[in-house]
Structure formats: structure tokens, C-alpha cells
Image 1 (tube, rainbow over the protein chains, first blue to last red):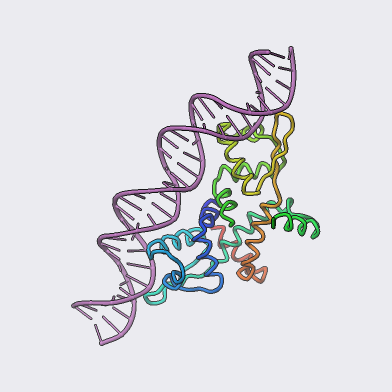
Image 2 (cartoon, each protein chain N blue to C red; image 1 turned 30 degrees about the vertical axis):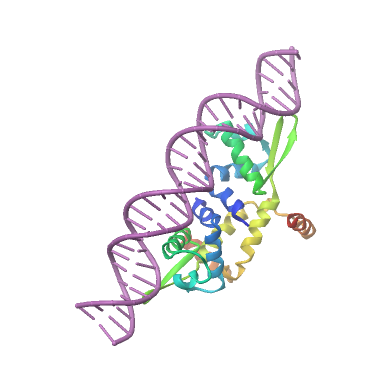
Amino acid sequence: MESDIFKALADPTRRSVFEKLAVGGMNASDLRRGMTISQPAMSQHLAVLRSAGLVRERREGRFVNYEVDPAGLVRIGQWLARYRAYWPRRIDDLKALLKDMDQ
Amino acid sequence: MESDIFKALADPTRRSVFEKLAVGGMNASDLRRGMTISQPAMSQHLAVLRSAGLVRERREGRFVNYEVDPAGLVRIGQWLARYRAYWPRRIDDLKALLKDMDQ
DNA sequence: CCGACAGATAAGCATAGACTTATGTGATGC
DNA sequence: GCATCACATAAGTCTATGCTTATCTGTCGG
């Protein structure tokens, strides 16, 4: 079910790619700038993100513009919503938990 | 960073274990009921969920009671919140997206 | 048409991860 | 004390996955 999404996000390289795309859509070459990653590797990562519904592509001449696909995020949101019962009820509890998690 | 959490949830067996625990805390043996999984495998899965902060344990005699740890869910929520900008703004857009995702 | 470029795909390799069987550890009951 | 139970850990195996190099597809400028 959600395996593809969580698998896609389990890889740190793919998470950085996704994060870059979240700032703004761009093509595969632009995504590579500043990252030590080969062209095929990037292409493969994008394919994984794409089939997980986290990213979508749009052909633009000989470039392919990638952008965040909200569908993937919504799928995670839906999964998370199933466990709403375990979310800290009071703001103070959440704050305390976040403080605990920091260290 | 979040690799441990997403890796933990990438496995379908671990997601079912987590889901079971979300209904109510129980020990490792109870968790195995109805699942075709060896005792060591369960123990290993629980260790992964535990070190991802998704589950926590409480010793009870010779049993170990496992339960959902809200900290893990909150961490996912925090990650998701970073991409709030891509969440459908209007309810209608969300509904339409969910409808699209169904088929 | 052709050379250069953007990107995808193929095939091989090396490591990570999920399983197995065997054994270790600690609590319980007789 | 000792057998048993609940669980953890060790070590080995097999598959999945992320990388590499090499090659293919498709688009552009001349």
C-alpha cells in the first residue's frame, strides 16, 4: 500500500531532491547542481519519486521539468490521520514532546 | 535524519505491527497472533520501530508491553508540515485529488 | 542530415535489509 | 535449583536496492 511512498522517502538523496523541488520545479540537470550524483542515478531517483506519486513531470522540449505532486503528500497525510488518536491533545503536551525530541 | 522513520515504515510487516499497536498496546507474543512471522523476526521488527521512535516498550515481568510512541508520529507530522505549501488550499481541491487517487 | 545535449534504460556489482536457525538472558513457577 | 516461558541477540543466507559504465531515445541548432 504505502510501501512505495515510505521506501521512496527512506533514501536521504531522494529526500534532498524532493526538498529542492519543493522550493520550485526544475529539470533533472538543474537538480544535479551542487549534488555529487551521476546523471543515471538522478534519473533513477526521480523515477522512484515519480512512481510513488511524490513528484510529477512535464516535458518541455528536450528538458523534463519536475515538480512536487501534492498527491503523494496527501497520501502521507491520510496515513498519518489514521493515528490522530495518538497526537498530543494539548498544545503544552506537544511542546513538551518536541522539547524532549530535541535532545 | 528522518531515514530511520521512513525506513521503518517502508516495510509492510512493520506497518501492520504498528497498526495493531495503534489499536492497543500489547506484548510481542500477542502481536504475533494471526501473523505468519517467527519470534526473532518480530523482535527485530520491534527493535526497528523502537529505534525509529515509533514504538516504546515497558517491561512487565517477563513480558514486554509495546505501545505507540507519539514522538514518531509527531516527527512525521513535522516533516509533512514543511510542505504545507503544496497541500490543496481549498477543500474542493482536496476532495477532487482524493477522488483522482482512488482510481 | 548531423553533432551535441537532456534524459531514460540496461546490465553488472556491492551493500543493506529481511529472513532463517541456534543460542543467550532474564523472569516465573514448581 | 531447574525447567519453562518471553524475548533478545548472533550468524548466515537470499533478495532488494543504489550505484556504476555503457548505450539508447528524443530534441535542438546549424
